[in-house]
Amino acid sequence: MHDLDQWILARLDEVVEACRAGYEAYEFHRVFHTVHNFCAVDLSAFYLDVIKDRLYCEAAGSWPRLSAQTALHTLARTLAVVLSPILSHTVEEVWQRLEMPEKPPSAQLADWPAPVCPDREDVLKRWQPVLDLRERVNLAVEEARQSRRITNPLEAAVRIETDEATAQGLSRFSHHLAAVYKVSQATVAPSTSGGDTAIAVVPAEGTKCARCWLIRTDVGSDPRYSDICGRCANVVAQTEG
Image (tube, rainbow, N blue to C red; front, side):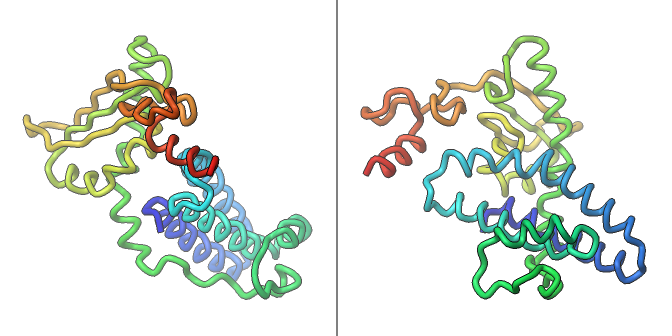
């Protein structure tokens, strides 16, 4: 499964655990606040925004897209069961539309969700350096936009220089950083000065892909599609057969 999808399922396991503790203590407000925070902060403001590119632009049967869809289905069915004691009617509407083999006739009859991320603590720990820098990257990108070096985040290339340990942790996700930070290009390197983390934002090199809107250096590399990047060209070619 995609690294980011593992992370959201690790967070889901934390939510399920906290909600169960809330129910057992008859502290239903804890359940509400836990789920609301998860939906507003982790899902709406971050995860769902980041996976749009995979859902919209990758091939229908590709591994990146199927991984995101699997995570979304897990989120939907798990949250439905977790919320069933306090949001019964709405949950039933959701439950009847979920496609699952041998599905119980009602969410009220479903077993409490089991953990879905066996390496939860390790996954959360690995992602923490990436998430810790997200707000700073967003601020740097916004400053670049306000100073008119770029007109929107997808025109940006971000370069992060930080201490060697953090750089090593970030490099593990080098292929995902641009998507996570909602820019076209992102690189990370150990700091040469040994000082605090530095974030530079410059215009991304390349041309805007007419399909995914990212700035790519390989736009037009496929002679059949002069205005889209290599990835999108492959997807369109598959779709057209």
